[in-house]
Length: 350
Image (cartoon, rainbow, N blue to C red):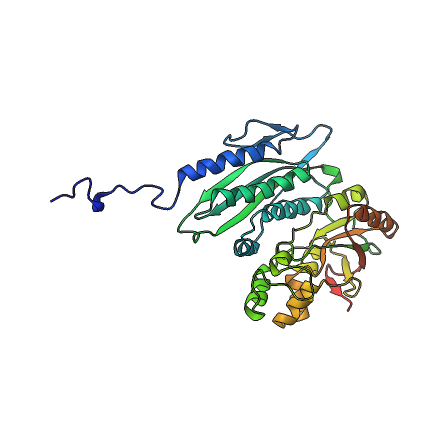
């Protein structure tokens, strides 16, 4: 005999039962729309909530070239989840992306984000997008759209990933690729604000497993907690570098792969970079990670930025001007090495 319509066995299954709440998604969309609208610039066309974001190339370019990059914040999202702080990783994402196109001399133009997870609350999604929007506003860049996907079965409840795509523009002849780098150029290192968005898988293992620290525990030899150190915002170097962009022969954003792995990407085949590892003070967080996890120096250099988040390669006579520009932006710098004739490699001298 067939089940009656009112019996539990015959109850219709809804999308919400399967793990996707369309009503909550609509509420999140409405909050996101307000946030996105606050980033519109004079170059944005179209409407908020359309199927695609639209932005004009700014006036005044003879040969405008778009510079694009897609990235994420890696397992830093797990720290945000553990700490219950979701308002900073969006800004991390934008700043990371700005730095990636800054190395080519590009001006940020537009950004799109992608949030995928399961059982994310409206407030969590709103915090993530507000962080993205805050980063966009700081760079005069439009958040032209994005996607928020609830994907139960792919993600565990409460977990998410965060990624984004940036579009910038540069005058084609002014684009920086590193080809102008010559022996005698100076390596100017710009201070990081911590791990930025790389090395978190190893850092979490050391701090939480090897050292047995809780997310809200005081971090030894610092004035903050573990969460404070790990969620420090990935610094943007735009304000520090842009005033002297015309002096740069090449630039490297120090992300996964460390100093050597990123600096080598811009070296001409006939040049090598010599880095003096004692020319700056490695921050406490990194020495603690090395000691707490008994990590050898070569591994530390490959995984972490060690306090150098960005490197400019420029002529010796331009260094003073670059240092002063960074100081005005509140960024500490050090001369950390030089370019020599070589075979496209990076060497540490100490």
